[in-house]
Length: 293
Image 1 (cartoon, rainbow, N blue to C red):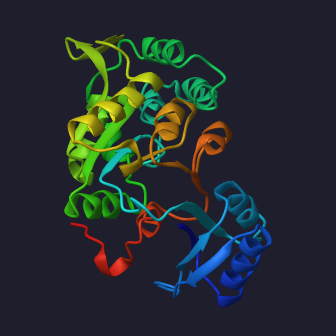
Image 2: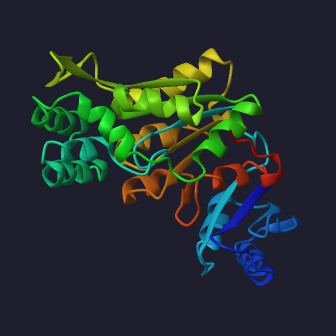
Image 3: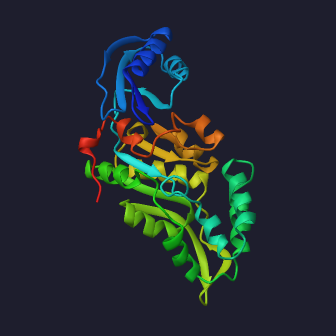
């Protein structure tokens, strides 16, 4: 049994739901149940058929609607692993930190190319960090206070899943100086990121320890699932850039969130219109059961 979930950017109309059912039938699906519209914006369609054909069929629905097609088994995930920059927060921290050094445009261009998968991640990261050498570490606190904002729905997603027993992990190709306070405030139980080296109150332009890259993100997912006794199909991974692709591809539900094209192409689900609460609707969790402090 498969479930197709529709989540409208605004309000899901009955006609849009009917159109989705028609597209699935055209794709050879045998519909067993069409659920009620929840919170005026989301609905499930239960069917038997071919997963890929169903996804291709729903792609023909012309509306501001995000959709997912998945197995009914293990729908609610027991582990959430997420990228930070442009996923759990609205900015790329290194770009905003570079603003305090007068280098935002230069560094942001490199960041964009790295996230598109046009540059080697580690090389691009070390090159950008080197440009920050000599910047006072007080800029980090200023950046956190002045620039960093949580992505809409971030707290609700993480805290709701945690309250229902899921393990929550923030993993970032960014920096612990940002990731640790962000993780604490949003509600993640675990965090891993790169470490900016500091000396005499200034950044040295280097990193301490191994780089958290695409491979490390995927390794952390496997390690964490194994430690919790979970299969990968019980895990949800979300990110937006090329360095999130291995992690996204590995998880039972891999979500590209307002993502770069390569990441979107690698994901099971691509969220384009909604905030992060869409990931709760995908798991069958409607707003009456959401948690947020």
